[in-house]
Length: 377
Image 1 (cartoon, rainbow, N blue to C red):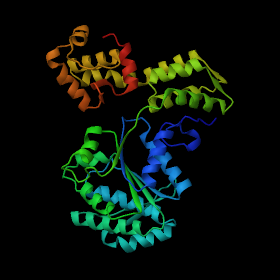
Image 2: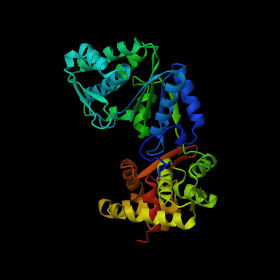
Image 3: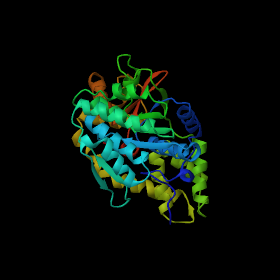
Image 4: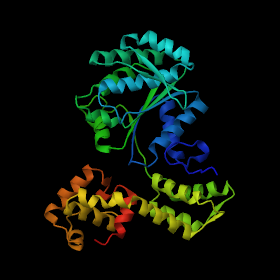
């Protein structure tokens, strides 16, 4: 039985839930020759949205599209090698043409070709070793991009990684230079570490300052997600109680990864009708599956850090860990509470959400939050 609730990859437009407002805006930005920086929490569906956007740009607007995730890059040289490889694969439709063109234009970087054993897709490894190589290789790839008869959309996921390279990065300055000279290319920069990503675009001292539109991705609205879940079951001659769907979305807070994960497991039960008992079973399975990982936090964190983490989970969300009604309720030393919170935010165990009233804190991993809610000690 085919499971319509995809978790790790984009399943196609028929399995993509809503995001119509975001898609309309992103399409408008791309087709009007602007770049955009998009940020969100992890696992909120950012990558799926990018892939859905690029599907539409290819199908309706005849774009060539490029997607790269640079989270594992460690230098300007590795970033550029990855970008050149991804662009070359999209620029040249036939493998033989790609190999010939890359061999011609990037000969000085000793290109090595390999092919994925499962997909057959080619990949290129370039020996880019110096800052001069970085600049020249980007100049070459943008020259080839500009010669394309089609518009090109490039999505660079986890772009904030360049701010964490051991040697200071010049990628932002170099990219801005070439983007200013092209009419063919629009770029979507995205990431999940908000403070690092936005500093690259909001800091007047940084090259990318004021160079792109901004978008923050939020949870899918309750009504749209509820209708999507019911429809996915119905389309496969199955059904699920509306009350169960409501409970799912409350328990997962409509966070895309956790909602998809729970629905995937419910669908996998392979019953014609899904009820409340099925949801309880799945929730217990999830808690049991992750329990050993969650228990390890007691040893990894200090006593105060663990107590702050657990207390935030029990409150769902917190404005201040130093407030008496919070620290007193959970027996936390207010003098060290903020220090513990700062550590938890830095390690991405707690997420800091900004709104008009200031900061709002909640446990980042929702499954961990649900497990901590049940912990007595």
